Length: 190
Image (cartoon, rainbow, N blue to C red; front, top):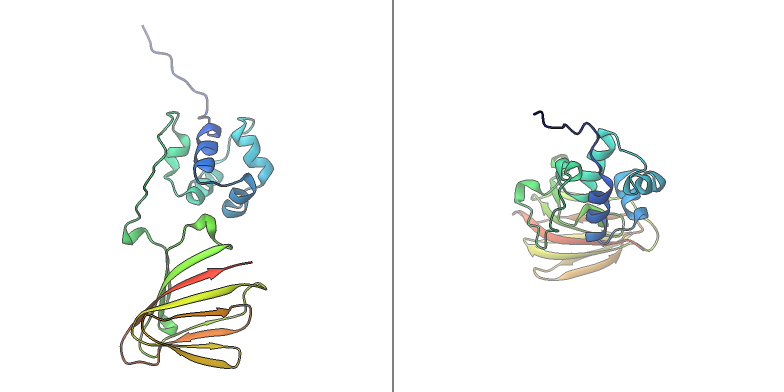
């Protein structure tokens, strides 16, 4: 007796909806993060459309899961605690300017609330163009020394101190010291 083989494509919709809701995301949120239209997401969740591998890959990345989790037909238990190892933390290297920016916040919050670990080499700097109107940054110095320049104003930040400033104008964070400096940088978009 031969076993029946199911040649139907996997139904991604239920897994997609379960993962999206577990992260508190609306269709619009996921659409923005993954770069997939809201109507396509709705069709996928209702099993009216099967996504291409490229779209499935973008959705998995946006949700922070392996692609196989979207293709699996088994209902999985939602992870209560998710720990990212250091090598899984995205990093923006700015070695040319003497900085390394580790992205600590989840990608689904990008453009709303972002937080980073900023490391500046001696003499290093992170220079930024104005962000969207109403954006603020909050910089807490964890190690070394840093100087902040916002518009025409300059201030030193003391160890353990927090600087809060408008980021909707040109701004720069510099390490004037002789040792490496580290800070926690939080960006809040309005």
